[in-house]
Picture 1 (cartoon, rainbow, N blue to C red):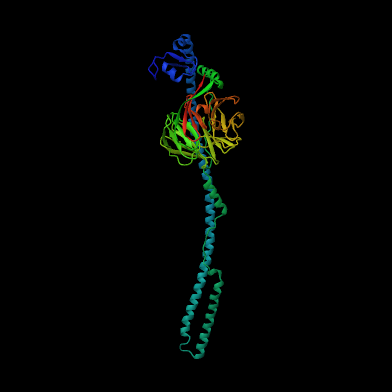
Picture 2: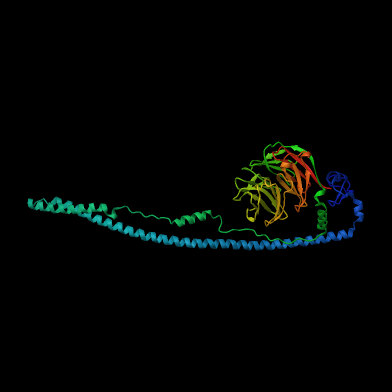
Length: 495
């Protein structure tokens, strides 16, 4: 059999990685591994039937798990559809009740409007009739005035004119009295809105939903001691001793961003993202060449990768996380947090974000809060990592690295010989690799927080290392200094 990469015979075997290898693989990828032996000797010592039986047992078990998942998910879909129908029905019932009450208020107000206006209209109509009567009287007086002096004696004419004059004076007093008569005022009908209604409308506008529809996830226990897992656990225990760890700088790559850097990650495909503090998000190739600045508006702070196409970035001044699709270069979601946000990590399908200096919040990808953890830190929560229900965060001002569980209980704190811990990452065995910026060192802290070891220092060519990250599923990665002058490519091994 030949190696798929190098087309050379698979003649050797690496027990550290449980992998048959060719000569080239051993020299390039397994040079630090112990116990390299010939593949033929491993085959001779292996009882094929026992291995076959064990693998077959694992296959059958995994098939049963997948069958279980298919059955569970199919049932889950049906249940979810029924719940969805129920939610829509509940929303409709709420709307009906609201409409019913609003219809009643509308009917009541319209009836009151009709009654009031009918009363005012009746008063106005009666007043017009009264005025029309006075007008008719004046017209009759005018006609009579023309005839009272015709074919009559002077005495009769005097008395006739005098009588009409008295009637005119009475009409004058009537018109003068009208100046103070409420009936002469113009009448209009208006509605004064209840202040409570305005408040209610304001609240309705501010309400984004009549309820909250959320996804509740229940874990299915799929754990079992398979032969493959037993081997991996044994190997993990053997290699978790940090005293056997060594790190060397393979090469230093000049990037010359020359701005204060606030975060760095290695993407799954090997490329690197470097974030300028409150500035741009730079995408670099796997060999450290600047490809482009991602078109994301705002002042970025920290970054993490969600999947191959998607990253998340904190924006402190906006108090928000932006989800960005790298494939079509668009912001697909903005999650508002209500507090200044800094460090960011993605694990177990959720985001962990540091808020100010006292809260670490775990949220789902829709922005729903799963857990809020109160912590103490002398500096803002700029750098953190979430893995296996543990949150590791560094406190630059307090010169410490802390470990808490996802309930907020402190598991350990590490302060020994630290001068200014910044970025950190976690290796496959749970050990913490931290960049102690002011001491120009990279330090490994054991998983239990009890031991530490300096992996590289200023003598190895480091100056102000601020961030460190592993390549995906590899024991190599990059270190970045605080001002973005260089990337140092490293290799980590457990001898």
